[in-house]
Image 1 (tube, helix red, strand yellow):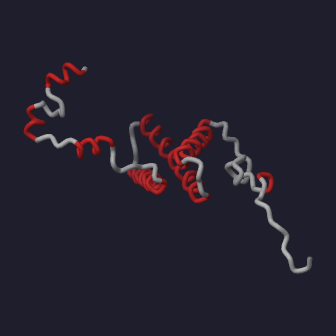
Image 2 (cartoon, rainbow, N blue to C red):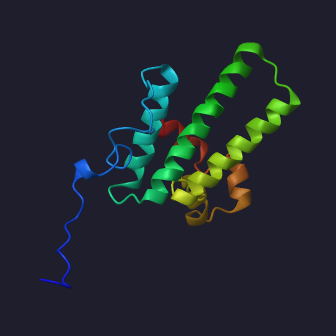
Length: 148
């Protein structure tokens, strides 16, 4: 047997770290029963479900960052709604957070830049004058009354 290698088996769940196997989100134990902790965990679950079953470690890292940025964004929004004021430095920070969220969503493929309304616009070749005669609607006045 000298010079031969043992047959390796894939690591079992018990051999993986708690973060890798999904039983914990952080190396140290953190109480995630707080409202922010629950929201953070819910966002991770939601974004992960949106990606499906084939999530790579890189995807997991981006999802964690995205979830954290989302929680921070919601905190800033809440502060603004309570006070009605936002300093310029807070606005700059908020803008950076929102842009980072958008980039992460786009990276993960969760942000579709083509909306349903845009798809409808491409399919519908309505003459601009007919559009104006319909009162700024794709349907005529009579169609709108009958349909509603």
